[in-house]
Image (cartoon, rainbow over the protein chains, first blue to last red):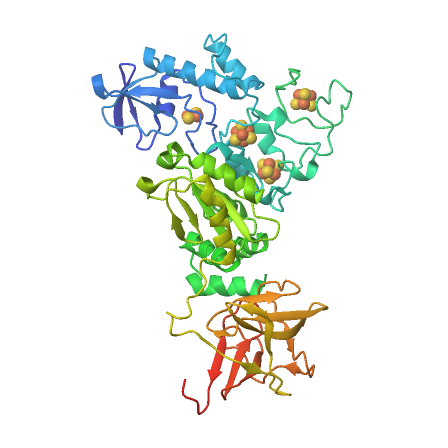
Length: 225
Length: 283
Ligand code: SF4
Ligand code: SF4
Ligand code: SF4
Ligand code: FES
């Protein structure tokens, strides 16, 4: 067992536990975006930042990937952490303003506006879809391509993948997904899972017997039970 | 592209283990000048690496290209030092003159243009590298000259200084008619003209007469790894010997050497297998 201090309180956890798990165990909320139970930690969004260490050596780390260490001092809501988180949320809003998930997170942190150049990306490169497809659906149909500015998610050669079983899991998990599906060009769509649906809204347009991946919906905000 | 060749590269490369994926891709790229889609699929199947991961690697590194590259590669450095010395202007001048963007290849498949981030010769910037030859302190005026030199072939073999290379004169092994063609020069020497046919196409092919040079010129582009049938343009007999290439197994093409003896070349495009048998001749 490893003993560490989170916000001053001692906690003992097993070797290999992440700071995020330890903090959640203690009931300290840490917002996450690219972390989902059942998928391996990836540390892409940096929203789960916490501060570790003391004095000048204190630094920010992503709690979803950082393993607990003996005697570590962790602060989950210091002013430095809150400030960094707010900047990250502003940056996320700047790239993907249409995401309901990001909007919700931002408003929970009291952010009213973002100060960066507004863009309308359809992906924040959180890698959730890639991990979902590989780890839960065992398909490995989509992945990261290129690097830097050009980094993107998709199938090899941008054509429909033979490995994709069109389960829709990647759409389901995506926090920015309403634009993810490029249904007007089915052969370039990320998996073609919804090529035969008729977005944007099934329910409003009366396609009751069809399946809708989004719950709650990111675009039309219909809450389904 | 020949699936067998890819499989051979894979087998030779790593004897079935997964290590060295990047150097494997490098070898394929060296052979085809790019990574054909088909090749990546075969690599994925044979090594058990998922296609997604392969594609990720192939798109991650600048050194790999998924589209065919031209015969000559011009890289313009846009690293910090070259950038402040005007690399950007040089790059756009190349784009203007070649009418392509970085990462593209001219329509005649001759020249590919790319920009790179640092070539490690910052003090001499702006740097341009054409087929491995460095040009320093490049100005807009020099751009045209570099393109011209690249097209002419910077890698052209220097015949006088390289002793392994010498011109030969050949004739048809059936009718003994000389195959030398003085109307068209390759590598600065009269070319060897034969007729080839493949895939229902039938046309001339000119080879360099320099033993050791593999420069060719053709009427119809022969796809890499294609085995073609050679014919004498005069007696129309098929030029085909009973022996097979030691490198790839394709039939060999026999040609009589004027000075005596025989040279055999492999009939597979891109294969460099050949045999020289100058019986009783002092070279
Ligand atoms: S729909 Fe296709 S790409 Fe998406 S998770 Fe399922 S298998 Fe993977
Ligand atoms: S497509 Fe969606 S889930 Fe996948 S990386 Fe982009 S934002 Fe994340
Ligand atoms: S409910 Fe939302 S996700 Fe579903 S079809 Fe309508 S708009 Fe799309
Ligand atoms: S949840 Fe930890 S980095 Fe995204």
